[in-house]
Length: 323
Image (cartoon, rainbow, N blue to C red; front, side, top):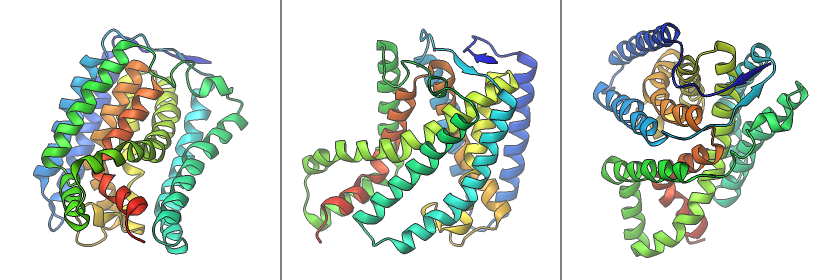
């Protein structure tokens, strides 16, 4: 049995080694992408600087003074192997093929969106939780006691700071404001009408993105990796890479490249490189928050808020549009 506790310092040599491995992998992926037509390295490096470094540093400072609850991992090796094997199958079968089939089978609009939400909750929460319970993990060891809600002033402070930074970034450079302006132009909606829809969209994104992804990647994966590797920094870096790679099949198999601005679907190697370069730095932010707070409520709410502005117009169209 291994109790995962947050320590002020990870073993330095292992942490530096893990960081160097990530830098080499990131550099190799960036070099591969540089040969892809239409790829702009500046945007990807911007993601690393903003999310991977700046926002992660703010998260580190904002969580000072929080005493995270320990997490009990009784069999780090087998549990880590189980979640990694599940993620490999999940990335290809669900994110790659499953969501494509759901979109083809379900009618467009509310039924499709509801079906995808239920499918994500099943594939990312219910099924992996059932697998871990079958492995002998006690229910109270899946999520630390008291971590579901934000129990302290420091956690609320960290959430407020990071939500403010996310909102500022997305209103400045994100696609969300353009989509909202387009929707307002089509329907004649005012800003306050969108503001009334926002809490509903926030609740939806908190379930679809926050609850599902944070349970799978932070609670199950990162916690087991930390117990297995015995190093918090290495666990965060490894989780971030896996978090990125899990998105790669979607770029190849279900048209996820379109949302990323790619002209054509990439080959698997290019998709994996893109996922490491663009997606993995975002994992740093949530990985640091989880490691330093063990607050499931904090990472879930922040993740939901992060996806709010980019998806607000789409949510409004689905649930409040004509027809």
